[in-house]
Image 1 (cartoon, protein in one colour):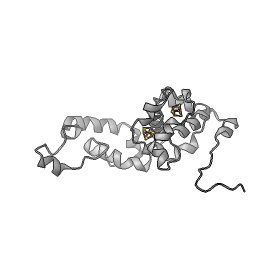
Image 2 (tube, helix red, strand yellow):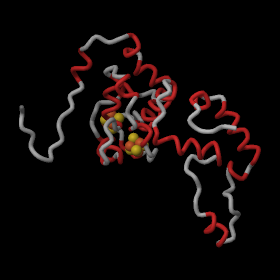
Image 3 (cartoon, helix red, strand yellow):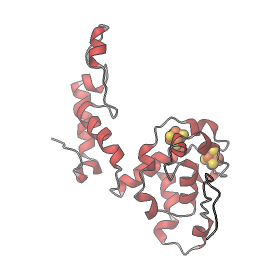
Image 4 (cartoon, helix red, strand yellow):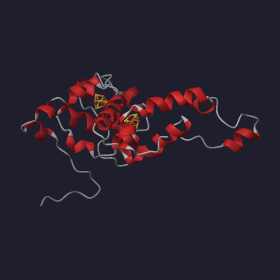
Length: 188
Ligand code: SF4
Ligand code: SF4
């Protein structure tokens, strides 16, 4: 067995995956991702600029932006569906700013989320956010109500949460999505 220098991360060579026989579905995965919003995925030149500033790469999530893009381009699909990385993307868009090819790796992450949702592979990381979205109209639940009151602001922020009609409309939309089919969160 080859010795690995301590502390040096191993190289993960995905090129062999491109040589294997692909199923029709796998061949189409990059096309599907394009249709789901990441139109420029094929322009990626794997320079690594996006990975160098991505919090997901820094915190050890496996399929961070650059690596996910490569995997999708070579046709990997099923192996990615069980991975939580896209659900952990914080939408900071740092990757979008630094990409020299205007790929917008953020869009790839979110297109991957859409593909995963199509396949009923919703990350557990997302469930609390989805519950809060249905309940309050915010994927990130707003805390600090006491603080708002103290400074004379209304307890609820001036957003979907304080607009009953908007909240009702949002719930109607959510009930028509695959989220409702899954039954992961209570929807009355
Ligand atoms: S910065 Fe852009 S071109 Fe470079 S690896 Fe990331 S997506 Fe690809
Ligand atoms: S938007 Fe997502 S993929 Fe891009 S740098 Fe931020 S966390 Fe990483």
